Image 1 (cartoon, rainbow, N blue to C red):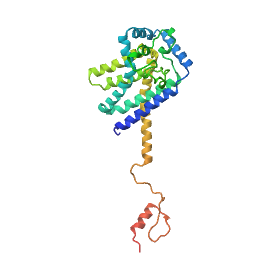
Image 2: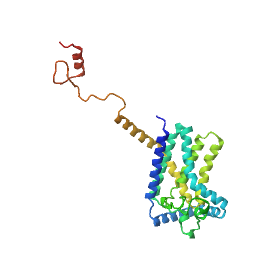
Image 3: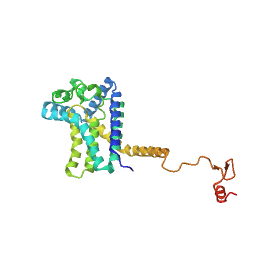
Image 4: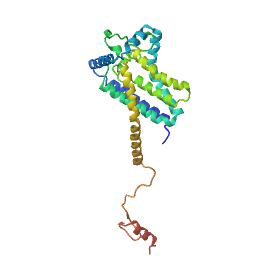
Length: 286
């Protein structure tokens, strides 16, 4: 197997991320349906006794020393840590890079299917009567974001605010954590592998961007991606093999004359067997 080239990997990741971002925008979904799904998630959590979003959100809103760093983490780490781990794997663990990249991309595409089938309003966009505060809007004076998720001010229209289920913030963080734990060689790296997905889960709930079940769904999507990625790699390898055979592998092209050759003394080619042709060539012409 050829080692991946950095420019090809960068192009591939860029294409997949652009498709993912464009797909999110194309499947914004109906607002009423998204709100209904969000309320259904909230009710289910209440029945299960796992609705931890409200107390966390109140804490982050009342304590700026927690809320503001959490907003920065939500707006930036998602886009910084994941590429950094990919680069680290590419440079330091190249034997594991291709499988890890396939896992991440497969899970990301599965997440896009989730956004399509179940557009979900995040807690911060529910009616204020439900008790949630959008901390990013509340503390927007401290960052580059406005009141529309983590998008920079004026670019809120470039994001799908109803893509809450599943939480790929949590899913990608879990992928990063597994990579750091599995391939890191120091206790600090392994500790970061545990802490990062846990911290991300707390942040997405405390900032009212996701429900706890969104985080669970994000982990489930990563699990499904882990199971499907080897199959995806086999399909890609099979397609590459077919393409390589079609393009030619350096072997001599087949004879298209079907055995019709002209020998000494003949003006019209005749169909001859290989043995007959060999006998004729061994007999000198008179």
